[in-house]
Image 1 (spheres, rainbow, N blue to C red):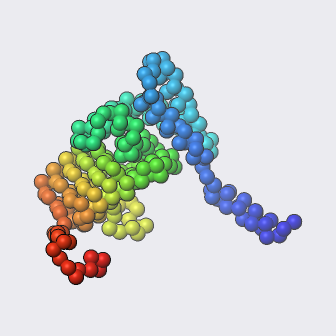
Image 2 (image 1 turned 90 degrees about the vertical axis):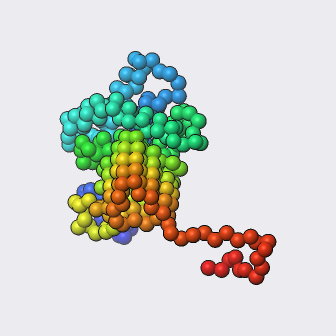
Image 3 (image 1 turned 90 degrees about the horizontal axis):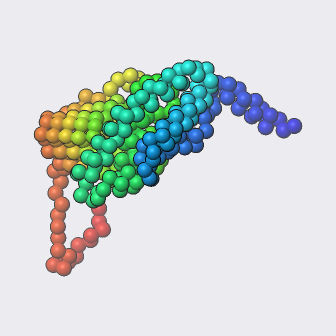
Length: 278
């Protein structure tokens, strides 16, 4: 017997008894959420009875996932949560429809709802968030975070499931967006790629406090803007320009932009300039 391997196996066994284990195979969760979205936004028209049967099976799969995550300790709680989530589905579906319609209404590159449902990473990240948030608001478990991290891995958009986001919500392009746990976003807000709604402090002692900003209704935040701090409020109908850095509140109807100006030169008229100097 290899003594080192034996001692290591004992260490692993002891740690597993202290919850150093995966709660569930994440592929089951991914399959469940993908199946749910195939029911909500199918590739072809389904009959009502088909939809009912598919939803019933999807709900059974959801209960199985919850039971495995909770190690079978609270099966009744799993069924109770499943009942609550699937009763909320009509409202969540209506929210998703409003999100998609708002993207279509505001994005000149969008031609139809089908394009948004099938290809827009921002819409996918939003719809996963809406399901994850509905679960997170009803119970404390690993599932909501696993769901939003799945969307994060597919889209590059990181939305914490505990964030509060109004309807409709618009994400354009989306790669690199970070929306922190205690962020509050109002209705008709548009966010572009690279935006961070983050915290000024990341100490563990801040865990129970509001660390992330509030964005009121009808705000547009352009690419690579950074807005930090739990007391920071972006007033309604404001426009936040690209590459801005904000740590203080902004009044309603404000326009925030970088003060630096670009210099445009004609290369054919200017000599002896090193364009690669920093």
